[in-house]
Structures are given as C-alpha cells and as structure tokens.
Length: 118
Image (cartoon, rainbow, N blue to C red; front, side):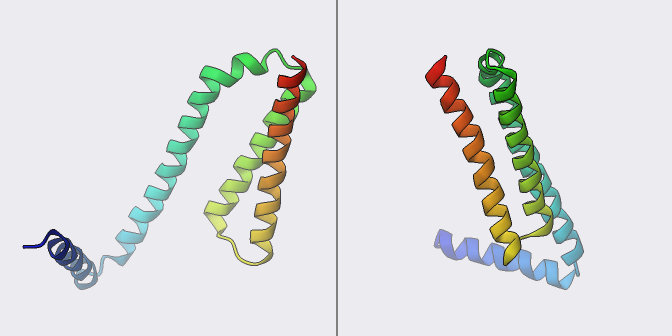
C-alpha cells in the first residue's frame, strides 16, 4: 500500500474515533497542554542561552543598558503571553506587532551600542 494512502487512512481512523467517542473536549485539552509545553520549552532554551552567554557580557554593561534590555525582554514575554492567551485580530494584532517591534528594537539597539563602545 502507498504510504500516503496508509497515513491518510490512519488519520481518518483517528478523526472518526474522536468524533464517535465524543472526545473533542479531551482533544482541546491536549492541544492547550501542548501549547503551554511549547511555550515553556522555548522559555527554557532562551534562559539557557542567556545563562551561558548573555549574563557574563551584560554584567559589564552600565546599569541603564541592563535595565533597558531586561525591561524590553520582560515586556516581550508579556506581549507573547498575551498572544497565546487571547489570540489576535484587528487592533490587538497591530498593538502586538508594535510592542514586539519596539521591544526587539530597544534590545538590539542597546546591545549594538554596547558592542560599539566597549
């Protein structure tokens, strides 16, 4: 049997089982848990990279530059959390994009200035 046809049949069987056994709520719950696990995994990788590379370098920066970078990162985390919890449409999407762009620009500009003058 063709692997594509076999995989489509397996997918159809799983979908039929979900519908027949009325497992939509369980499927939604698993989806939400996977979304949360994905965000936690990204946060863990970002923290590990910061711990290994960024912390030593940023400890030599002036206090103002550190506050700007950490503040931009914290605001970006809140902004991404807002994206995952609420979803975006219309003015919310525009606000999300503008806040994320401002955070990335502030962090990048501060990092670039510290690389240039140090």
